[in-house]
Amino acid sequence: MQKEYIQIGNPNVFNGQYMLAVFRLQGEEGMTLVDTASEVAAESSTGSFVKIGTATAFSESLDALVYRIDEKNNLVWIAYPWRIFDRGGNVQNIMTFIAGNVFGMASVKVCKILDVYFPPQMLVQYDGPEYTIDDMRKYLNIQERPIFGSIIKPKIGLTSSEYAELCYDFWSGGGDFVKNDEPQADQDFCPYDKMVQDVRHAMDRVEQETGKTKVHSFNISSSDYDTMIKKADYIQSMMKPGSYAFLVDGITAGWMAIQTIRRKYPNVFLHFHRAGHGAFTRDENPIGYTVPVLTKFARLAGASGIHTGTAGIGKMAGSPKEDVMAARHALKLYSEGDYFKQIWSEIPEKDADLQLAIQKEAEGEDYSNLGYWRITKKMCPIISGGLNPLLIGKFIDTVGTQDFITTMGAGVHSHPMGTKAGATAVLQAYEAWKQKISLEDYAKDKEELRAAIQFYDKHEEPSPDRPV
Image 1 (cartoon, rainbow, N blue to C red):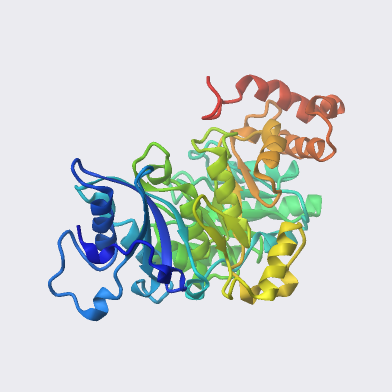
Image 2: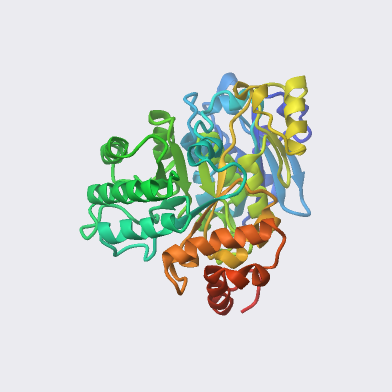
């Protein structure tokens, strides 16, 4: 055991100089939890697997500190002096410390980050979101309801014209938002530049016909920095301001790609797709971090929106509790995790203006007039994975908010009457929920919703919480 990293009960970890984290830990046979905790604290901050002989008094002041241990549940609380992190507001650097070498240590069999806490003094150093769902709502002229979106399916294999045609159909049916699927790039059958051009033509046509603005999220994840920026700049040259978002595959392209786009294009909605997250976040994985932890770091990095799961209602793995918690971490000024209460504030918790903002939020009132400069702006939950019109009301009831974007794929494109009718059925299902009318009653004179009920009732996929 490296005793210098163990300071159980140290009250100084709450003085604003530390980022706090809770781990579920288990070492190899014969190691105590305290031993394992000291090794993880050392490896994820200043040290290694043995005491460092070249340590200085100053370097030791930057040690991570184990300040609490729960032997019964294999839980360890570790405080990290946030001064050890790159002062450029670098989330990649934080993850390299706390979710880097520690995941590969032979002596550690379980290492899962369950929650993190960012003090106000640390939040000041990081970007946070700039363009929010509120900005997108203004562009789309949608005040309260969810923003209804789609992923074009099949996810790959369509020509640029076929792709744009489905965008047009979805928007014509009343949809608001379309995204590239996360693998879509610059394939030979669908050249990227041509896809952007065709989407613009489809958007112009449908906006002229409906009088309503639309948004498309383009995947700009690329093999290198220059290609990513070239794609972003081309989209800006082709699309109207507000009509596009930049999607980055945040796990596979990396935190640097996320933060690069946040800083170079602050006035564009930054869409964090989390493809690959399950390798870290699935509950059965002993190594990694949770969905709420990933969500918190995405907000810290400045994403405008991130996929947060379907709360056990769609096809993706994930517990309702964790997915709802992640959505709240994304949206709320004040959010509660399993272990920490997070206030996304750059001023003290006891500040009167901040307390008034938290009170207004709890009462469902707008607090933006109190000044966004005091806080880290909110991030939008993006919901995808097995949703269809029949599940909209159930999801809203479960997550407790309408501040999200849906991105349905088969839930609209597999509608027996086609994509346009699928989009219309989504809006009809929402209206039924809003008016507190059963789907069946509301669908009596709504052909699109009636067909959706008949089709998706037969094809609905079981959620992870429902047996086949």
